[in-house]
Image (tube, rainbow, N blue to C red; front, side, top):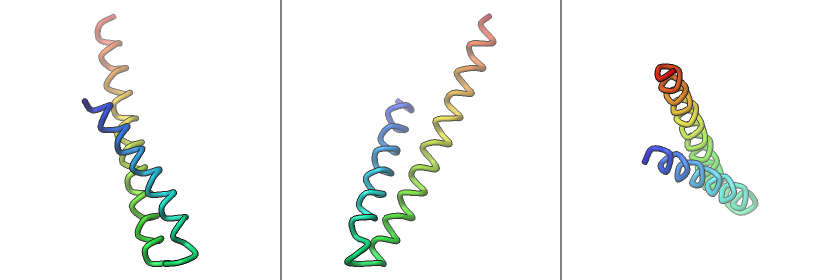
Length: 64
């Protein structure tokens, strides 16, 4: 379930990034809000993905 949540966060981050760049010519405020949201979403998803990999490696080392 956590991996699915990470995937959803990553997809939302990418879509916010695309949306932010598409609003740049017309509305700078909306574009900046979307870009900030994209950075936060991508940061959290990557951070959680790395934490999940560390937990998986700890589990595999304990079972050996």
